[in-house]
Length: 204
Image (cartoon, rainbow, N blue to C red; front, side, top):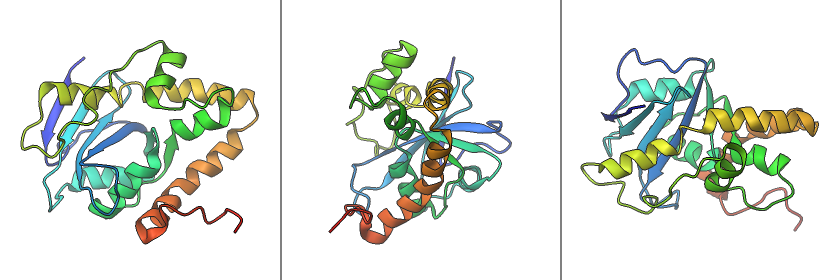
């Protein structure tokens, strides 16, 4: 299936149905320091749409509208970081959301390996490469390898959600998971407000 590269925004009229897998690439992992560079999306149909954002204006009304659309579920792996980046740089609150990493931690309590690579390998039997993870995502042009890597991070999220939903149901944790998903945009707001390294629920 093809990977589509877009400059600045997703095209007018592009629909992802009622759920879209979302991920992003940044210049680093520091919320206040590192800019948002790329957003990748998939409807779970084998196609991926990779958007190289125009910095620093971030003029992407179609993408912003999709992220904030209450009728479209956004599926992430560790959505907390992406959602905080979208809030900081795009000025949108992303909702509603589902996070496969959160679901994994609530169900796969027999392991501490909740990264996307490990999760995809165990639940789907698919081995994804993380080789391009630390490449220059702020470059003026993305390499074919970068586009393929970005696509690989969203192509399996719908299938992972289906597997994890079965596990959540089996363990009686669907309601707990939904409460966690609902809180993630608020956790992201705490992060952008300066509490990213603080667990406000911790004792002491």
